[in-house]
Amino acid sequence: GAVVSQHPSWVICKSGTSVKIECRSLDFQATTMFWYRQFPKQSLMLMATSNEGSKATYEQGVEKDKFLINHASLTLSTLTVTSAHPEDSSFYICSVVYLGQPQHFGDGTRLSIL
Amino acid sequence: AQTVTQSQPEMSVQEAETVTLSCTYDTSESNYYLFWYKQPPSRQMILVIRQEAYKQQNATENRFSVNFQKAAKSFSLKISDSQLGDTAMYFCAFMYSGGSNYKLTFGKGTLLTVNP
Image (cartoon, rainbow over all chains, first blue to last red; front, side):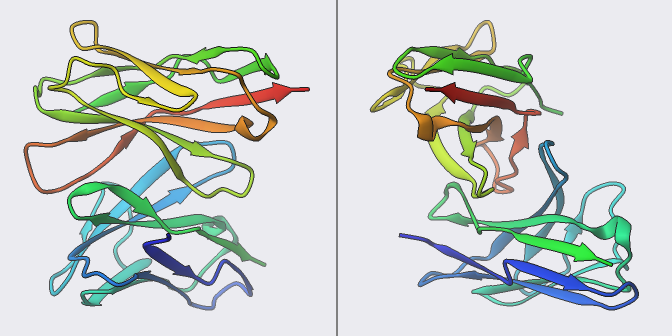
């Protein structure tokens, strides 16, 4: 069964608004979660590593102030796209490490900024 | 830094036939995992198969098997008896197993189309 829940699956909003995406681990504690971004027909690009109780580790080139990550509990990490613009439109996917085994992915969030 | 290369952007195969997807990687590490992930049009990431680098035996999962050549740093995926539902993007991925960061490095992917 699924070990990760990601919400919402699809969101459309106006330019300038902020959008929050949630990633939850189901029935287990996840100290580490990952956030990826994927453009159409391209591979997954790691944006940041979300660590429970500490600041996220961002990959080079990812704007920390644009993509806010909060991992306040052992089962929930959130990605907030602040002041979103059309170029932020993309597919965002989270993943968790479960029992040290291969990363388990959420179903993704399709973000469309008008 | 690790790199993963998938040299076939697109492939097609007839239903019931066999197809092999290529993947090469570059690393200086000796302890690592290799994975193949499938991403169908729904865009859900599905783990197909994984291989621990210390294991010489090639991993198999039903119709999916790998040819792991550690010295050559090659990790190809063979799909036997291809089915229409195998149509998807396939990503090869590398993960260093000696630390605790669990980061995955993905290849650019191969779009596989299974034709009826």
